Image 1 (cartoon, rainbow, N blue to C red):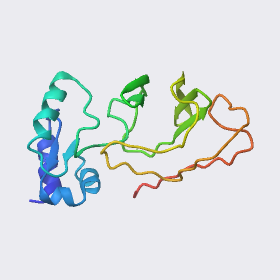
Image 2 (cartoon, helix red, strand yellow):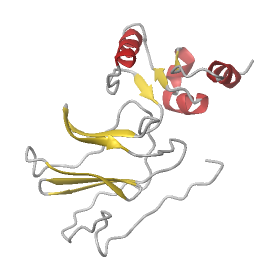
Image 3 (cartoon, rainbow, N blue to C red):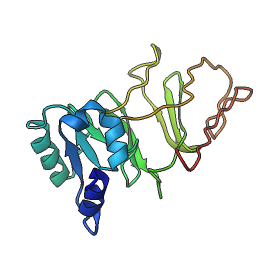
Image 4 (cartoon, one colour):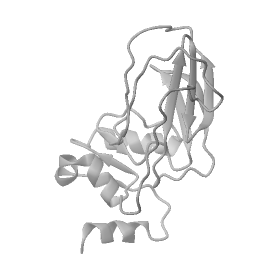
Length: 180
C-alpha cells in the first residue's frame, strides 16, 4: 500500500496529530512532510524529541524550536502567530480562516523601533521594541521546511501606508497555480 494511502487511512475520522519520521523521511524532511500532509515530522534521532513533542502537545505548549522537528505550514492550522525577538513575544494573534494549503504574502516593515507585520495585506502587528533600533536584517524560520519566494530587503525612508506599502516601491505578488 502506498504511504500516502496509509496516511489517509490514519487521518480518516481521526483528529489526532500525525507525526512521521525515520531514515527515509530524514533524507528530505520538508518535501516528505508536504507530500504526506502530516502535521509534524522528526528529522534524525527521534528518541529524545518525540516524547517532548507529545508532552508539549498534551499541555497545549509551543513546539517551535524543538531540535529536528518540522511542522506543516508557516502558521498552525488555526492561524495563530507570534512575533518574537529571541524568547520574548512582542505580539501574538490569530488569522481568521487561515488556509494552510494556499500561498500567502508575509511582510515585516521595520522603521526605527517600530515593527509592523502583515499577512496577505492585513496588518497583524504594530509594536515598538526599543531593544534594537539598528542592525543587520535576517530571515529565520523554524524547522518547518518553509518555502520563500521573492524575498526582498531594501532600505526605504518614505512613509509607510496602512497596508504596509511604501509609495513608489515596487510591489511583488506571487500567483500560484492549481498544480503547485
